[in-house]
Length: 143
Image 1 (tube, rainbow, N blue to C red):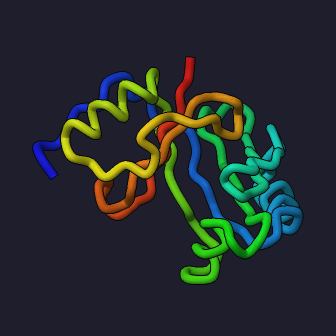
Image 2 (image 1 turned 135 degrees about the vertical axis):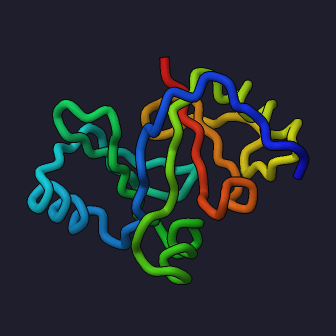
């Protein structure tokens, strides 16, 4: 990989995502134990998951829970290999397409060459852990 790029318009951490085998059980745990509030729950069919976004009043960072829809999804393979746990960290950026362009120019390994629609209906894209210090990174476009 070439010289490390400076990705423009990084706002901060958007969410941390945990892969879970049972979304209902995970929601019960996080809302009861740590007082999270369900912000959004939806099926993201093109990723093969059902996801829930949790928030805490006053905190800008969300927790996302992702559960596989079936055993063929990437999240199902992740859980089978590593067990339930942290799956990825998402960074809020002003322009996902522009961020991908900068990363691609530097030689970063992209999972998504073009943005796709994420859980919140906004553009998102994933960057391979090999280019991000061993962590799967999602870029989420924010206003």
